Image (cartoon, rainbow, N blue to C red; front, top):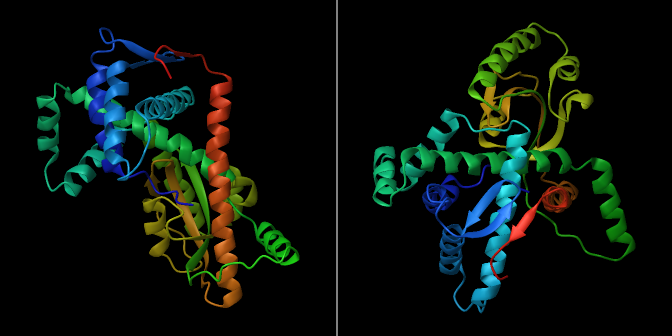
Length: 322
């Protein structure tokens, strides 16, 4: 399982044609309607062209099948974004700026040059930022669903290993992995105003934690994450399973230390590192491999369940042949 943000370059590339379509929805033909959002033929045609270009050589996917799959992806993206907006999940100006800066750095150019490139394609600055924001919102909603449901307990690992032994299944040995066990307190912040208020509150909580107040008690009282009931305990995790800002903070801590407030796309965190270990023995490596496998299965199921729930309550009208 990888809970890091989607590659900024990828959703930036998707935002360019989407932003162009956003300015022509009133005159472009309608391919589908998803609740209160419209997917135009231009949206669809440009997405199909990108998908065709990215297919592996030798792929034998018909135009009709590719078009059907891409339209389904566009509908899913729209439903996820709308779900985020209904739950006040947003993208701050700082997050959009960060996405632009990251893409500019990856392409060895400047943010100004990116805006200029978009303008040459008839895409306004606001339209580009709006659609990057939608990609960030979609990313947040999916990551929240995964983080809430993809944690794997030691008991689940034990049960999987026991079943494999009973069935005569040989499990992979796995590779040595540095693992961390941490607690955190999260105050959600989905807008600039909310972020300012959350930052003020999290600094007060941080002061209490540094003064010796029990961290688990503070987490149960203040944290807005699903781990609050467990005193903020996130269990064991390896690099690549948390968002970069969270991981960077953990890497700077020694066991028993509490981090200064950390900002991520979920809000403001205070983190306490409990333990660090290298899963280096054969048993530890195998358990880590099993844990990673189960986490990936849970992440996939969480994403599937999210889309199923959104589709069950959605109005979808497909106006293009599938």
